[in-house]
Image (cartoon, rainbow, N blue to C red; front, top):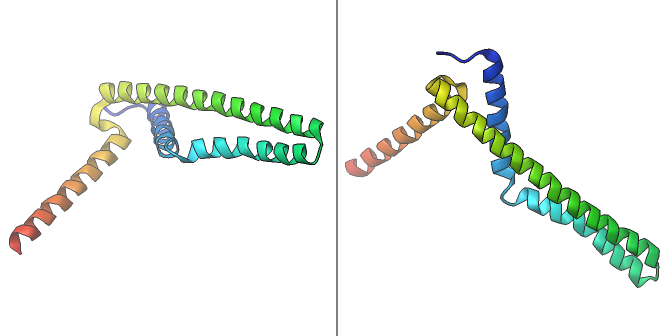
Length: 126
């Protein structure tokens, strides 16, 4: 049974969001969070050294704000990722291989298997 278009669109959006989060969560997103918080800290240290204590304090508070905002953003992205995985599992259980992203994954898995089989034949034939 083919899924309705709105269900398919929701599933594709969830699939893309889950894949994007899996790609950026390893190092890109934490590095971005760190660098965004590091810039005001470095600026605050510079302000402190040239005796602008109020500006230094404001920079340190800004860094704290950025760190907290990054932490809450990370939590929100993780919650959305979990929700997307739950939706994808639910759709896969209901519609199985009729979903377009499952068809694509199966196609790529078959291509990889074909590549492995050809590599084994080439090794045996040599």
